[in-house]
Length: 181
Ligand SMILES: [Ca+2]
Ligand SMILES: [Ca+2]
Ligand SMILES: [Ca+2]
Image 1 (cartoon, protein in one colour):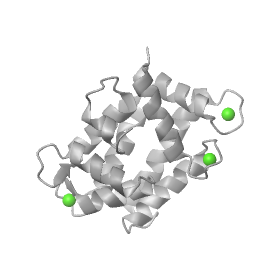
Image 2 (cartoon, rainbow, N blue to C red):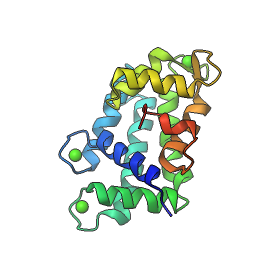
Image 3 (tube, rainbow, N blue to C red):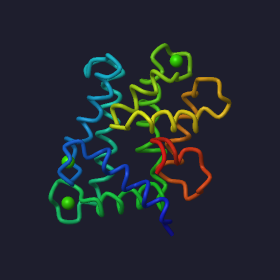
Image 4 (spheres, protein in one colour):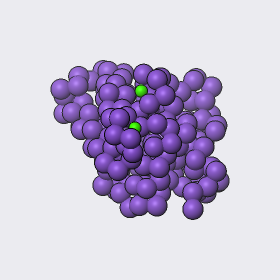
């Protein structure tokens, strides 16, 4: 059973991922988002970190397209995307195989000095790539920095991503990964 909350989060995710804003998600959208992240953090797409991100988005796309492109158009409608995400990551057990590696790569990219922590400026760079408006970035940071230390650990960020994309729990802090829903 997928809840309203889960569907709300997936619909918001679709809008973020549809970089070309044409109402359909395709591989180019994901590669564009990956490139935006890489360039945002001052890396080159051919660097080790850059390649890891692009490979991660490619794997994610393959997972989504494998079963979900019902009309064979090479792109996913919001409904096809929702079904694919539910099948793979909410009802299915593919998260650790085709989503976790991507979430880890993105979190590691965001930890620019490699100390395992992500500060507000790095978090802002990350969120800007996803198109998150500034007030929402502040709200997301406050929700995820539960100790109020001014840092979010790489592990906590990855955990928040798992909660955002899969959890039915209305209290999960990760629901606020991209600000208030
Ligand atoms: Ca698109
Ligand atoms: Ca399609
Ligand atoms: Ca850091």
